[in-house]
Amino acid sequence: GAGVSQSPRYKVAKRGQDVALRCDPISGHVSLFWYQQALGQGPEFLTYFQNEAQLDKSGLPSDRFFAERPEGSVSTLKIQRTQQEDSAVYLCASSPRRIQGEAFFGQGTRLTVV
Amino acid sequence: TQLLEQSPQFLSIQEGENLTVYCNSSSVFSSLQWYRQEPGEGPVLLVTVVTGGEVKKLKRLTFQFGDARKDSSLHITAAQTGDTGLYLCAGLSNSGYALNFGKGTSLLVTP
Picture 1 (tube, each protein chain N blue to C red):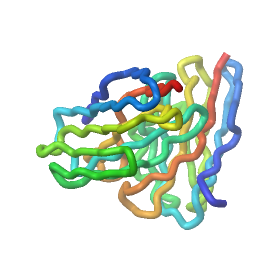
Picture 2 (cartoon, rainbow over the protein chains, first blue to last red):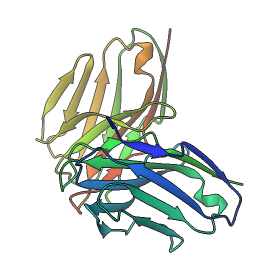
Picture 3 (cartoon, one colour):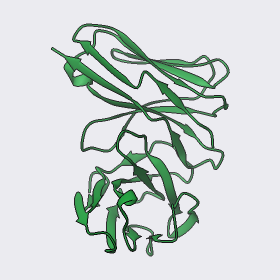
């Protein structure tokens, strides 16, 4: 596609439910990033993939958060046993280079945990 | 963590006015980026500044990188309603790949 695509755009989950958020990066982009953006805040780094390798997951808030990019293209961010504090917009970004240059962001998935 | 502080947090002005927003840090950054984010959308890159003292212009937007590469400013001349949005500055972290974002300046331009 022409840009980074994320799905679903909106997700409402009951507390304790597992969710999976999908990111389709721009074709051929080597780097893929996940960020979390709370209301009224700037995005915060969660994790980074270079092709299929997860090189940095230091920003993941807890072991309930898991991300994968098995074939070096589509990525999934999974949150187990969701809690209210997980409510945020989850942004995916991709970049054609191995280091952060221009990052192309998707529209994000707004997760609301009730 | 290299913190970026943005000011003001909110700004409401009328069309035609000029404004400046600031991005400050105690840390040195190899580069800083400015993004604009509209409601329900992801951030869109406006500019990257790399060299201390650098000034870049994008139509009515002027970006400046401080001499010490610790701060940056964005000046908008003759604001238009289409300039409304959240302006975020971001610096490349020590990792070399992740961005540290400020909290942003929310700009509202009214007719």
